[in-house]
Amino acid sequence: MPGGAGGPASVRADYDRAAESWGQGASLVYGPLAGALVATSPVGLAGRLVLDVGAGTGVASEALQAAGARPLAVDLSHGMLAWRRATRPPAVVGDVLALPVASAAAGGVVAAFVLNHLEEPVAALAELGRVVAPGGPVLASVFSNAEQTEVKQTVDAVVAAWGWTPPDWYLTLKERSAPRLGTPEAMAAAAAAAGLRHGRAVERSVDVGLRTPDELVAYRLGQAHVAGFLEGLAPAERRRLRAAAVDALAAAGLRSLHPAVIFLAARAPG
Image 1 (cartoon, rainbow, N blue to C red):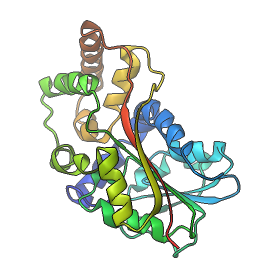
Image 2: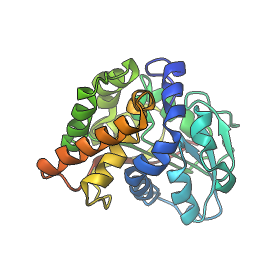
Image 3: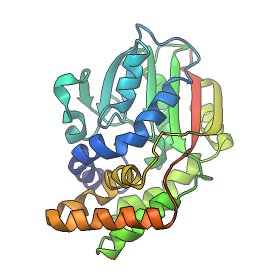
Image 4: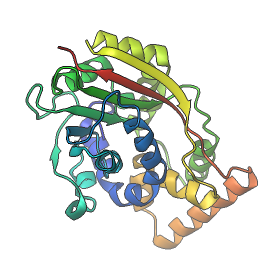
């Protein structure tokens, strides 16, 4: 999870609650998207110490390990970092706007779906560049403003019918923070303003491999914006809500997901 938007304490609490459901559900989508982000690196990552900023339950760390890198996970949510901690790489609690890492100490950095939460994405990109050795890769991703949201809207409508209302931080994210970098042009401009070099931003739809309404519901209900609400429901009620969401997606013919994503590959200054 990031720092900033909506008040760090409230955001952190929701992400802490979501650790298990995120690790088992939301990661079905964010795992493939992390792999796609790591694959954009302009240099080989094998042997490099690479920060996974906004690491959550560790899907980008897994992608970095698969590329031969040595990940160090950073996140504001201790609960997210604690998910399956015995089998994960080293981790530290920290804020993307003030990383607890010395300047030029890392060989690269990955920030998967972090910048879209922030009111000051240029400052965050500059901070990412600060901790990476000159010329090292700075990789980031956000959802495109052109992303199709039928799956999200359908599942969220079912949760709302059970009495859920979006938390303030989530409304801020959707209405104000996320659109800031939601085009290749905006992402490239932010990277340049942050002093990053050779920034290349592209938009691409990614087939994340989900093929059933059950998988799509697991992804959507695994996220932090509904975690507190679902936690307050009785287990039987949660099962009924999940079944209703599956039925709603099936009725709408929604069985797959191809998120539109903005990928940034740049290099640290110097």
